[in-house]
Structures are given as C-alpha cells and as structure tokens.
Image (cartoon, rainbow, N blue to C red; front, top):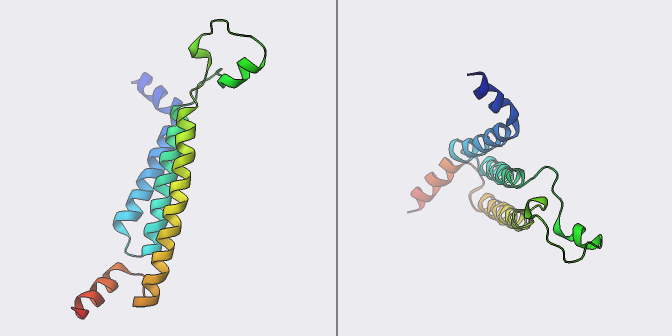
Length: 132
C-alpha cells in the first residue's frame, strides 16, 4: 500500500494534468455558454500538450546536436544519452493548431452573438427551432 502512495506522490505532475483535463472536459460538456466551452477546450488542449512534453523528458539526457558540436566526431554513442526531439516538435505543431482553433472558435462566437444576441447554447437552439 505504501508503494502505491509513493508512486502516486512521485508522479504528482500526472495528477495535475489529469485534473486539468477533467476541468476542461467538464467545461466543454456541462457549460451552456460558448465562451466557457472555448475556455474549457483551451484548458484541455493545454493539459494534453503539457502531458506529452512531460512524458518525453529524460533525466540526464541531452539533445543530439550538443554532443556533435562538442567535437566528439563519429564515435559510437549510446542512444539513451539523447532526448528524443520528436514529441517536442509535435507539441509545437499542436500549439499552433490550438491557437488557430481558438481564433476560429472566437470568430464564430462573435458571429453567433451578432446573429442571436446571446451566447447561451439553449437560447440559440430555441431561436433556431422557432425560426423553422
């Protein structure tokens, strides 16, 4: 039992990411205001990006370019000495996608407010049903 508690405490950052993901998911599902849904989506995206960066970190590892720049030549090296840059590059792409998604969502929210004069999902649905 103590081992389980020690593991849970040692991995506190994962508990933080899971908490952020649940907060974001709750906001997306439970809130009726579109701005709150957008904020929840942004929190969820940020938590996932932080999670992926966290799981790709290695203690004592360096990036491949540093070892080569130090003049070690073409000698055999241990791959465990290096940090894989791919997850970090993918998360940079995810950040760009998240910013673009946020911009489009906010632009659509402005248009929704201009058309329906509210940002509440239920009220917008009611107005759409009345128009049909």
